[in-house]
Length: 104
Ligand code: SF4
Ligand code: SF4
Image (cartoon, rainbow, N blue to C red; front, top):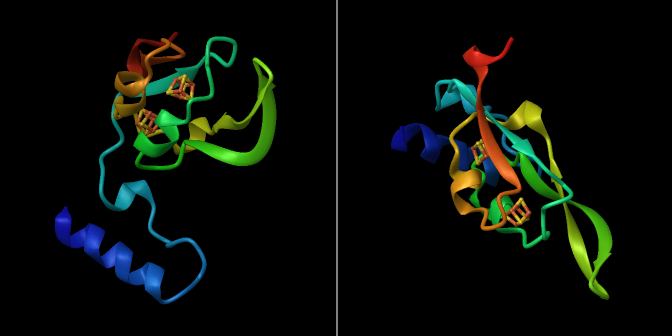
């Protein structure tokens, strides 16, 4: 896996565009996915740093919370690979993990 990741970094140096690899190049899709409760989220941004695939990210939107302008945290479930790092990082409980195979 380390060798594959190094190849991705090299790809990044050849272009200003995002690297072309996808999570499937390195990880098996896990049986979980993250769900995001925007009402609970405090927009601290910790999950955007933690998520390896950019499913949690800043999209440039600013919102006001308690009189402060903060960066909106967006969630793209298509990029979630189910690792659970975001849920383990979030201190507010805004992220929960759900088992895919347990869904109806
Ligand atoms: S770590 Fe939790 S509280 Fe912080 S931005 Fe992410 S979802 Fe929101
Ligand atoms: S479960 Fe993993 S891949 Fe999915 S959003 Fe959280 S950190 Fe990203």
